Image (cartoon, rainbow, N blue to C red; front, side, top):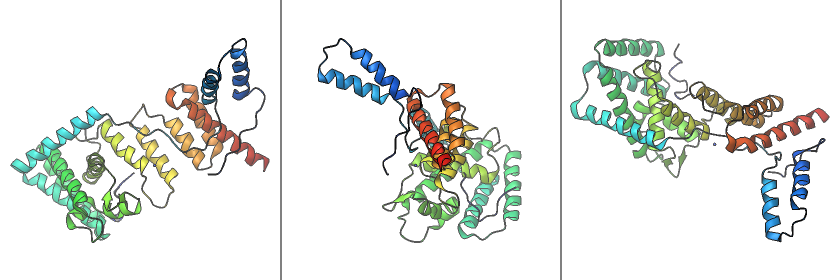
Length: 322
């Protein structure tokens, strides 16, 4: 069921911290004992001792507030290939034009944009019109033309965003192609110095997913986004979550869980644990972080995960004491 036309068009980056009280044999106790044994009998200089001590301290978990978490990495070679492929499709559409049935789909996409930007429109009628026109294009075997349409409209959307100075009324082209994108961009902090902070690739990813949602083609075998598309899409939203009723951590949690359904390599346990800790849900955070550490994956984040786990345990203990 499609949401009303005035619903969001997009789905879905102190004070000193007290050290955790040692209980029994802590990591710090073990590190201090091992360091003493290591230096026995040495006539080491101050520099050597300093280097060894620094290395030990850096490897010892220390309770830390959850600030950072992994976001999807962008494969630059895949992104370049995707950009080239999209440019070729858009060039073909601009050079040779598109068949009638496909142009009709492009028209209904613009109608959705106008309705979303104005908050005025009949969702039921637009749903019916969308279904009829997409089915007509598919029956006419215009899958290739529809891919060209998506590419050329994405190009037009990126150009409309770049041409807008963000100081006056939103141009019709940006409203028709982006719907309420301009309003959401301002509200969500995506505009700085009268410029949208999203890269062209990120804008194209945001538009592409929205286009597939509007045309009901997201799950069609010939149109569904690639893993690279999903990573670009959710990377931007995880770094710059949309602003709305829910807080940033809650929105990021939804984005992360949606990405994890499509990306089996994404360390969702670590991300959940970090964001749940930000939300003050310490016991749930500790469970997720413990499970992540038990998997032994993502070595570059292991120390940070242990730091966050210590913070979750400490905060939970302080709550119990109260």
